[in-house]
Image (cartoon, rainbow, N blue to C red; front, top):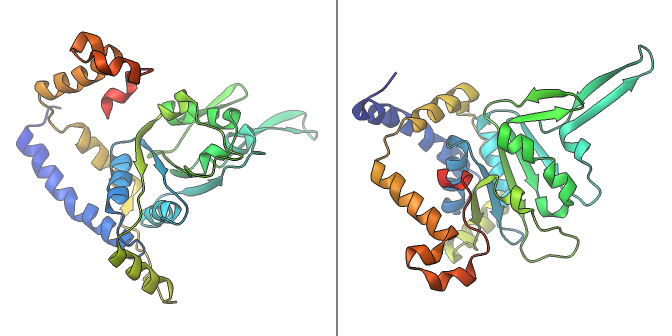
Length: 268
């Protein structure tokens, strides 16, 4: 059923208080880093995955963990290491000698929110195990395919300065992320506030403010927000300019672009 712009605007206004409440719950733990928090919420409500990059100690993992604490969703943290295997993520088939049949043991990927901590420390084979899950929201184990829960969100972190023992993310893997968030250092005032918070043993408990059903409802409302044809044309022009800069009067950019934007990235 088609809904008018006024009705959509009214529905959006109804959802604002709960989103503000979610940010306030995260603010009980987080100091500053508003850009990262906003991008995490964009990924949550726009059904996209987020890659967070920054040096150690900038609360990348803390932000993602805090967001999951404020949501009534299942959460799994996966520490990516060089010895990790694809089956450690997706699961595997286990043979039962008793009845002579294989049974499927699902892996930790079957959760609403996945924290892929230091994702670039696992080899490409393990990273590729996430491709089907991130793109199609399903996992194939043996000859069976299992749907993942909804919502399903992968939030990955990586450290840009320690390259020893790391593996660059494949292009196909990077393409699955809606946004890449670069985390910067906090201000001096924020740094002082962080020190004070770290020296205080007492902390406010995080209250869960959103359920899976409510999140899916907000996502449906977001999908119906009106987008003018001029904006579609504007985004398409940018995408085409990355593929053929010379055709768009940007010949000087040709040596700087190896591959243009893919079809999937036009939704960003």
